[in-house]
Image (tube, rainbow, N blue to C red):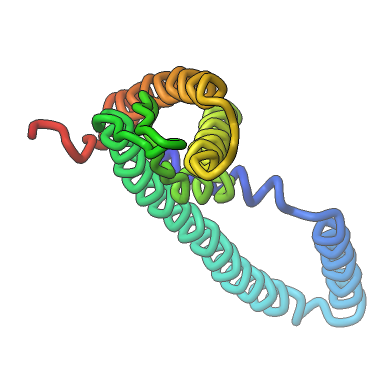
Amino acid sequence: MAAVVQLTLRELVRKVSRRTVLVAVALLCLFIVIGYVFDRYSPEAKLEWYSTLLGTIFGVGLTALFGVWLFYFQNKENDEDKRTKLLTALAGEAQAIVDILREPPTSVPGAGEDEIVRSILVPLPLTIATEAARSALFDASDMLFLSKLIAKLQVNNNEAFFILASRASFLPADYRRYMDEWLKGRQNIIIDESIALLAHLESEEGITPPNAGR
């Protein structure tokens, strides 16, 4: 809690604009001028005026400061809640990717005969990974990892679609086998990175993978 308060106050100080500082300086100058006028022409009312003014400034300033702090604190809490939900959903998506890529490959009808492929020709989900990357709630290293993973998933889906579409083409069988081997190698990399992501989420964020313990 103390760390969150300290961080929120630091954000408030950083967000104070130059115009706000100028307004504060102008009000201070006005306060000094009015005090000088009271001191010169109405000394008996000076103490009462000072007390009223200081009480007003203190009350309004404290209320405004608390309101601004509460606004940033709630935003911080909302960001943390959204981040946790994204990571939980990301764990489910990563586990789904691993499960899909560990399924046995299916035969793909070729030109006149069945071609047995080693890769999985099923589009892999990347909705949550993309949403997490767009949220801007993660640091640079996490964004780098997510960006690379999303790129691999997009290439996988494009290649899987191309191999399926090539069934009706006149591409040589050797070429289709080459594409299949290439895609299978990339899918092994995706499995390893998805497992590493699940391990990181469990150890660093306390998020248990959906299939853990089953």
